[in-house]
Image (cartoon, rainbow, N blue to C red):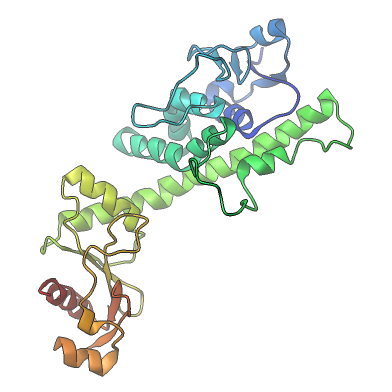
Length: 314
């Protein structure tokens, strides 16, 4: 007999749509049927229940609506979990391993990254937590995953029945699930290899303040976390990398979201190009330095490295 996943009937939301989808990625629940009900006896007959019953035990019951509930993903997080976060907290590693075959440290990295970049926002939305805190948003985002799920509920002037709602719920679960799998796939196949490349470049750098990437990698996110891991926070000032045609020297920002550089390229170079730049630097092959000093270009790898080294002396 197929296992049963229980959740509430009626209007559905992003969190339980995702919770159900994630459970069904697991071999144990792959062929499970979904029961949507408010009847306690019907729900208790299910093998696992999400977003309803007012109970949480980490085994069978995964609801977050009870007054005393205050569970978060871990001690480093303050966002209260929804049913999606609860399922991910308890089954997430197994889910990610099933989807990616990753294990050990890399599995942990993806598990945490998916929560931070995908699941936590759904938890916050379902619990009414604004990303802006007490600050009023200057505009309403045109599109969000919880909003897309909400729009799949029947409109006020459309026919609505348990059968219609169940059918719409399956569409919602598939929708949010496809985005979830896409993010897991991205973090496993693109984000993780980029992290490995940045880690190797940081570990092998000859000049402590300069990291050289022989191919372009999305480095900012990784740089800040790896610096913390290696206890070298703030040490790296410039990233030298290929842009496919030439080489770039980019100043590291003060933080991931900052427009201020730790050490901008020298003021005399800013806004200068080509031969005039060469005259100032004494290094032939210069292409440009941005007027804000956060990035510059050189024709060759060695020239870009020397330009970065020279910038350190200012």
